Image (tube, rainbow, N blue to C red):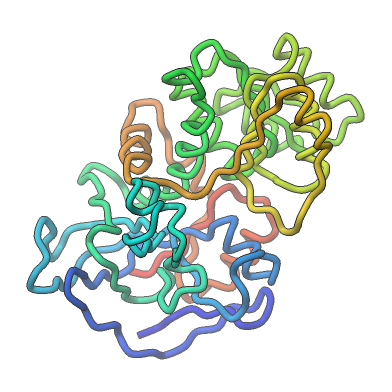
Length: 342
């Protein structure tokens, strides 16, 4: 079968490899579509802090089950599924506490793992799969995993409350994750949402998708403009860019008493004004992937009447043009780029 491998920065190669064999508890899935994630954009350029080259990409994977192990229950050949790609050990403290996304021995399908979803076939245990509703298109299904990340991040900000009712929100970055964070924050009843980005086109898309206001991230007064829109310090700031300028902006927006949730993948370490964090009681919250309940909420949101997948899936390439797909994702002009296999 074909397997995409990236061994040299920005260069997509195909390898002929054996089709994986089904182990107990697993199914064999034939790929339909796989998304090019922001993590793939970082990793493909050799910039991801935890995914060294070479690697086998593809964790936003949707496919059809073609074979099941004899002991598998609840799934059948022909089911359409999407992967929950974090692979916990199920034996450490965090796994036993229901926080398997923080497994101390975590492996990740499509990120430094021996298999990835950018292949003709792949295998996973059934507890890492979610059935796709029959009413969903492949494009809708491809957004379940990426939306689950902002859903999880948004829930982490529910400190002392059941949702974002009454809370002001700032989202830094109007890329894929930023726009999906907008959808999650709206779903969880944020009072007002202000978004920032350097590009006019991305800010315009954010307004189209329901942001209450947008601000040019490159403006010298960006922080003041966001705080003015929110009527003071921002209750929750989601940093979907995660580099030095945005984390400093986020802290200033949340000052005092706000929460900064780091959603984007940082390419390298940043510094923070720790005396301000301490004295002004600002919470810095990391957000790591998702849990099964986040997939359930993601499916609910995508299946709602107001959700339009075409606002997010803006380019689809056949697998033979995978290099063009990665080039397009790295260029940053598209929202979500998909690779179609079959």
